[in-house]
Image 1 (cartoon, rainbow, N blue to C red):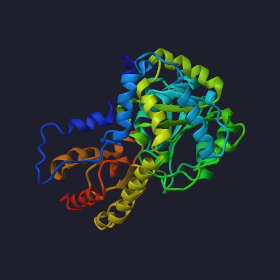
Image 2 (image 1 turned 30 degrees about the vertical axis):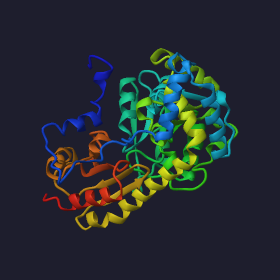
Image 3 (image 1 turned 90 degrees about the horizontal axis):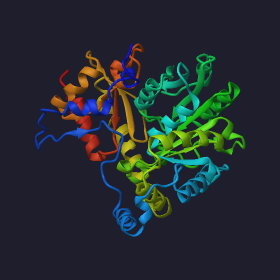
Image 4 (image 1 turned 45 degrees about the horizontal axis):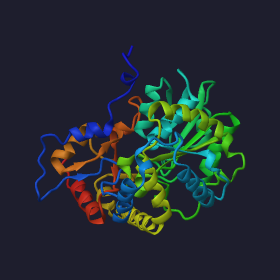
Amino acid sequence: MPLSRTANTFPPPVMEARRWLDGVDHPASRPLLNVSQAAPVDPPPLNMREAMARMVVDDAETHLYGPVLGLPALRAEVAQNWSAAYKGSIAPAQVAITSGCNQAFAATIATLCTEGDEVIIPVPYYFNHRMWLDMSGVKTVALMTNAAMLPEAPAAEKLITARTRAIALVSPNNPCGVEYPAETLRAFMDLARKHKIALIVDETYRDFDSRSGAPHDLFMDPDWGDTLVHLYSFSKAYRLTGHRVGAVIANQTRLAEIEKFLDTVAICPNQLGQRAALWGMQNLQDWLAGERHEILDRRAAITGNFPKLAAQGWDLLGVGAYFAYARHPFGQPSDQLAPQLVRDAGVLLLPGTMFMPADIPGSETQFRIAFANIDRSGIETLFERLSDLPY
């Protein structure tokens, strides 16, 4: 028996990957290409930082406790923006601000599940979701995706039991990058409603979706609140990773339960980060459109350069948002190859074994490439290094 809740799960994958860098030199002629983490490394744009500096100096409430469910003005801005974007009806009282999207997921699970309950998650999965379920005493039920890396509602229905409390989806997906079609999300909404379970949709990367218009019609349903829980992160859109600002949109009854969790864990979200997120929503839409264009160009660079790897036997399984997900042709498993790539190619990426349960085959041939922090030139260099591997 594990000694604690934390002993029920594995070490943080990104921290484990960083340890592979210890003792490895990266010459100037071959600097490290770090494609391991899906987070911007640049700070927010200068005008946002200047606005944040004024907040720190001029707004005393920036330094005080605030409402547990978040800054009212930010909740109202999210409600208005999302209602317009999704052509639905979302009230400020249905929005809560959290300390990052991971906390939004954790708080949601705390309101849904107890010991021995089950949550269905497509695999490959976002590893922090699995980690929280492990630490909550909740069973992760793996839903295999199809050849296009998409989950299918009929397959999920076969996994539902009396202990199933939710299905959790991420779109655009982490780690695979794929954008779930509107009809896929609608099918899962209908399935969850039929079985009276929650549908959690994490749209952390919604700002970098390649499609125009709303990616789904779930908020157009006047009764969306009986089933849907939507999660979001401001970290990717406005480079606020260190300020930990996320959001959860759900019915007011659920948010009342989420408030208990948030008050106990963090009391309130980061006040400066919330004000920065609000300022960004009100002032940086053109800048954000440029960021989206850049990410879409990098996505195009991935697909354009992938023939270099395809010629060596690689397969591109998915690409979109911040990620490419690929199958390698080598005899060694990916969790052994990944540390070796740091030494042999100056490349840090994550093996598929970090995104799937150990008892499901396939992950040993897979890698996730997070390209948020390498431009088109860096992508070309990455593929050159991978295509030259001597294995």
